[in-house]
Length: 122
Length: 366
Image (cartoon, rainbow over all chains, first blue to last red; front, side):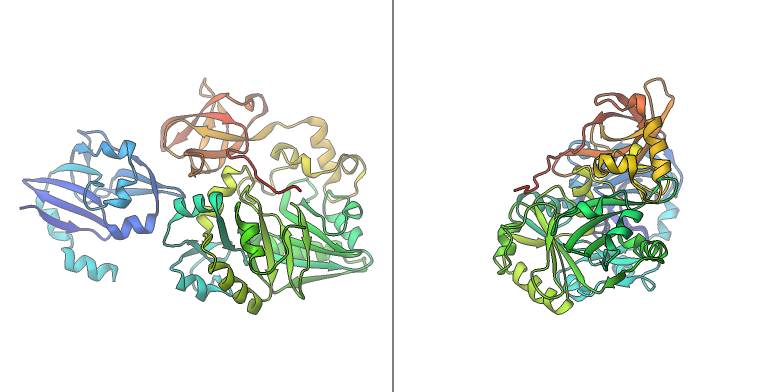
């Protein structure tokens, strides 16, 4: 059963078997508006917490999405190349951004659960 | 600028009730998008009619015996040749022929003109005009008005549905249909449409009637920007600044030939020199290949990797269906189709020079 975590930067992580699927929250996609392009990362790239993993481009602006924990990218969501609007229509489902193998699962302890995230966005 | 310092639109409560998201622009807290979102809002304007609150822009009335003299001094314009109710796009230049602001000037009557100035420049424009007017006999009056735009192929029908006569007015003409009202057939989207300055109370009544028409929806600043960019229109502060002259900017169409030769406006000598030298760089449309937008500030390179210019506006064009951008390139590289590269976060994105506008203008020229 995957466990879901949230960050203050409005990302979600669904973690199962040491691999996290990561996307932005519904709140975040609503703030960004219509997404027209997602700059996807290459599989195999190592990321440290805080590194830019993905750039999400709305009509108006480009926004960085940061790696919430350390790890190595195993897969990017290639469906976003032809349909970036999935990030709007299914932010927490088919609009996921990338998957990464976690280097240090203890970092997850610093993230929020759903109740804490809901309180965070008020 | 923080939200607390920002100026607020008189109709802000109406925008809040409509679900607008606000953001800062030129010192104002402005509705950026409504719940439909920028993409749908943009397309709605191209297909139906969009209502914009542009009250951040400033109206100045210039009235008096020397009103024509002031305008001839401030702008590369033959103000005396403007017919009553005719509007002209013009510029305020500094003595280096740099663009301080772009304006719409409308002749209301014999010695009365209306100036529409950009929000971020309005205070400086007023100071500049007052300094130029010191020895002249006229009054410059900043007006407190709500300023609305209604734009799109159904704008005229929707506006006339409120009892305002629209069909007699053609593109770039303006009138005063009621006390303290100023109505022009103009806009900044590439579509047919109108801009209306009016007192707040009248504006509330007009907005209620317009929104009662199913063809009309509120449109935010985000779509206003993508619409004007597709239409190839300059945003002052980005595409034209005090460091760009009208020759490089491709705005010489706004300056009558005899004025270029003999006008005594501020910046005339520098402009004549710029004309004689020809443009070192040119403002052009840029079409990025693929779907990745290229934003303002991105440097441009030619096929050999030499610096070629800079992007000044860029985003996604919802009607064009692809990213659209505008910028300046070396004059030798300005021909349509010239392949260039934009640097986006270290990646080289192929872009080509594209004719402006990206979407054809559909003005009602009569």
